[in-house]
Length: 232
Image (cartoon, rainbow, N blue to C red; front, side, top):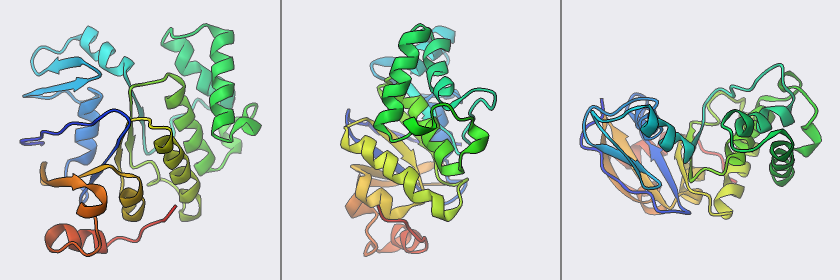
């Protein structure tokens, strides 16, 4: 259960959510996308406010139209090619018709260095490549914010770096992101602000480089130093 949560994400910035397992990070992320509805307070995404007790399907649709989520598991359609998977997000949400959707999907895949896999099926790709395709699918709909729920946790260690590099590329393009991660060095490098959660509440928040410094003392410092990180 989340308690006394309050923070803002500025456009074009990266917010990282860190903390021990069970601290509420994923619950918070799911609440931002209304996969889990708040019992009190409100969530505002791109000017669309979702007030607890007053959230209907119209509000949910409006919030999700402005946000996209990348999960731990890749959730790609196995019977569709990479290109079809990315274009599907545009077609199913009635953003673009088939041919314009395919053109945008190709452009996104090209930007992320994935165009060579356009005609392949997910089963032929590595876990890292599949996760990068799921990121491409999220980008294609041009959301105001992308939410990442531990995007590397299901990957073998040697595949992590490629996914982190893809996310770093998005940060350079000033795409607004909120990321749950245990990769501390990555979080320090990419994050504009960091929130440290424990027991469902924000213990501290501030600039990522300062809050997540290995020299930080106390609870946050001990947590940061307990993790092995990947640098990109």
